[in-house]
Image (cartoon, rainbow, N blue to C red; front, side, top):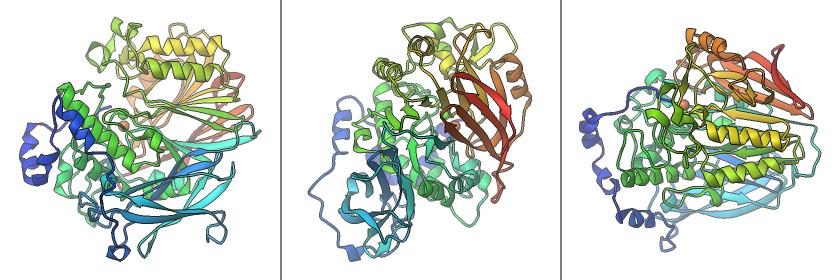
Length: 545
Ligand code: FE
Ligand code: CA
């Protein structure tokens, strides 16, 4: 989804002025692509830095944990004593980082500890795949580099797949354009009591950020001119994460819970599709850009080595289990999709959108998903993904306008998925989605052409953390959508996150919103609560809490 016009050639002067060192990272073509990716491989020849050489706090970007399994979580940090230095102010040497996992916040009962190596090839990021933990337990973790201790993080392992769990809580967040506002919602999220957070994409944006951080208008913190440039190089993507991760509210939300992340478009470029740039860059150039973007993403997220990109390819789709209660399939609807139909945008009567040869998942991911769902033994089945799955008519015309970037532009894949759910009698389907910067509670109809057809599950569209600024409770176009889509039960255009609670038979969904993001300190409240029943899905309004 676009926020504002893209940078154009008019920005070339800015590029020249601020990116002298950028030349060496400029795009490659053809055979040079392979050589360029080769430089991403970790070296063993780099010397180990003297620990005393670290002269200031390297934990400026916080800590994180993620991808909980019954015996494991991934712990993340990055050594960056200087946030806006392209290499974080670190020497071109390896650095020893020790870590600890404890049962208590004071680290009296340490259960695992070890030493990791922060490598300059990975911008001194650290990904520790801690094993041997107990299932369904809260833990605390921290790092040490030189004489500096990191903040303490709290995390939680998943229950064993066979374990009977009576309830589970999770939160849904997405879309945090830095210059659109403060991450007040994430600060409030840190105070919630959830087992896991799902972040569904647009972790960074490529849009220009001015010196006061746009809407933030923060004169106490100068954003360097290099953020006027839309990233395409590894350096520029890395700097985006440095800026975003320096935000204390984002750090607080990471430190409070394990996150399960997936990306959408803005981690690379608005509305890209597989190897196709929405700006029609040459494919070879765009694949180098995608490789840079994917690598910077992996370097800054609590992800396992399995998710590490190899050049422009990364396996981000993956499965989680939370006891017998919940199976989660995390999707990647960007990397393998066919180019958007009918030139993208909102289109009415685009027949290509239904072409069975077109796909939003790609064949391999689709087979994996249909197999996984078809054989699931969990009470509930959550799909954590990026773009609107339910039909969303945005006009009252016949045929209606539909977004070609969402599942409405790939209806054959949607129908294959829904047919499998019906044929295999998959129960407890809950789809969680980002991208539109709007809250929605929707019923998923087996056949969207027939509003009388069975409801096979529900979709929760979570609004943005900050993207598009303050927003409002409702808008004219949201009113039109409620009229045009009888399967929509609720929508709202404020910023926030969604808090969900599952028990054996019920899903409770609280839409948590803040009234503004352009200044700090907004309070949080529950705008609406919707319930769905596992064996009789469909959202019903309930008293907010
Ligand atoms: Fe977004
Ligand atoms: Ca998006």
